Image (cartoon, rainbow, N blue to C red; front, side, top):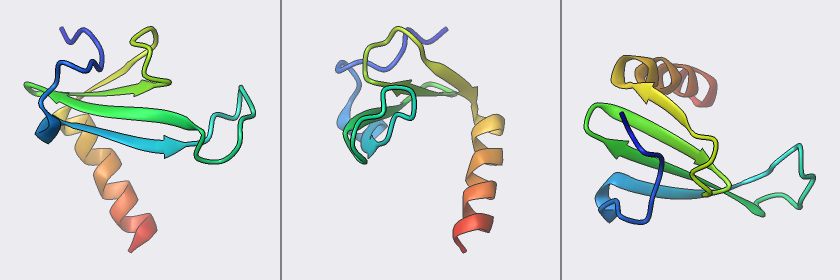
Length: 73
């Protein structure tokens, strides 16, 4: 099982995206979302704390990919 997004990940397997946190109501792009690939898992770590991560298997991540392609064209 993945331990959450960490700075130990190789840069090729890690991305950070400026996002907005609706709960904390910061300015747009203020929060960070780290996406990391560990083996067959994709880990989404909002706020880069490792405390609450979303872990997707590759098939689940493909569903998100397909939705984004459909929505963004």
